[in-house]
Image (cartoon, rainbow, N blue to C red):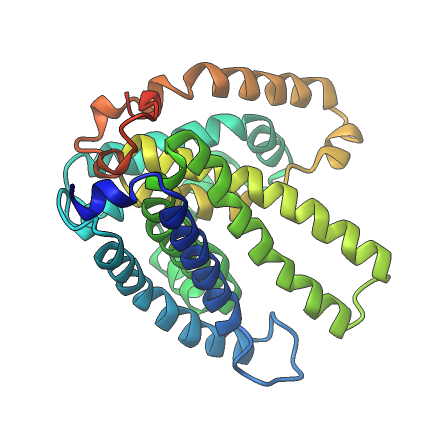
Length: 306
């Protein structure tokens, strides 16, 4: 019997996988605090320093997955890059369809944004196509963090490297639910900074942290689902970037909006269409080889992959 067969689905494998994911999450969050500073997290100096440390950890995370693979015996089958969702086959669909699906979910907030936007559509397109606009974005450290570095590194670490370690232990469906817990807990580190700079009451900060954990855990489950269904990393990264831009829907502002009935109609329409399109738009037939599905336990359901 092979080492892989001995480990597959065993308690020892699960222990190794969970501890590996936990250490990886701690390494990612810990890298944000190797720099001693009295400056707030949005200060450009703090952001640049954190870019350095988090990019180093993210660059090393595939090595961590490789070490897990060597130790557990999952050495055959798809390459390491394919397990991490880095492949060319189906990449155009993987970049477009999940992002469009996410935009459907945000149909209401997008309509609300268009209604409140001071420019018309043509002006917006002109700004989008203006190279100077993108130069300004790339020079903005907060924009780079929220739209580029955080989506790329978090999806690489918490999806592309953690899911392959969890799937052989939990199966596909449970991995979708389990993986986001590491992602949600990792965001609790914001409590440290809020308390440090006294940005609110202690009770208010912890309520906010619980809400953020819940929101990020649900979002993490969604991007884990996208990762497994498409076999690509690019979809979760683009969805993450888009959601960071949109933020949590401004329901309070929608309630006070002069056209709130119209807005809430599109909110509801977006949610309904999202659930109707969730499986058709993530059908694996569009995306090529689903490497992670080769790691499933023999007795586990692979319905997520079909």
